[in-house]
Length: 227
Image 1 (cartoon, rainbow, N blue to C red):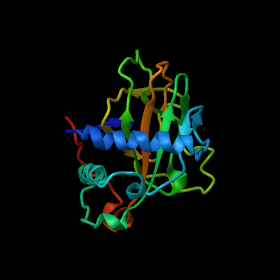
Image 2: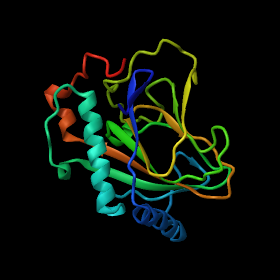
Image 3: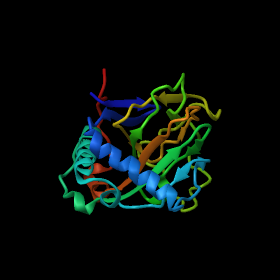
Image 4: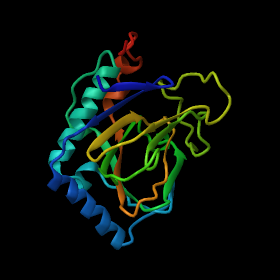
């Protein structure tokens, strides 16, 4: 069972067991985009954040297939009734990130994009990281985020917080190369700094899925998915 919970939010963590040649192609793509200076600054403090692509534009097809399979399995564990849909109807946004020594990403969430679920594929993770360096960090922060200017409705997985204190609890996810983490777009997350000379490269993804507008998907499973 790959589904875990952070303050009521279901997230999925697994390793895609990717062919090294495939994953290296994403590393080369990120470095190539950095050389062309096509980046932007959003949550990243230093480092590189590429422009936005669709998943199929930026990622080799074998990796795209594995990501969509994992995403579909994740949603089927969460929702009690979910119809099969051709992946061509699922809109995606994807971008590559490079973090150098001392770079990090501040806490943010992705609902202003219109997505309900997001993901991170870890393309390269330095092997000599200590403690919580370079982790994906889930943060228990108040919703909505000030960045949410479009005033999207509170997502169904956002539970009323029992604590008013910000940063009450953090979950540090220490990834390895090839790991994929899927989570609700409303879940605040950040990236802790690394102090390695080696690059930390990741690909972020947003999923805009027409299945989630169906009446049958308004409510999650009533039974817990874990003991």
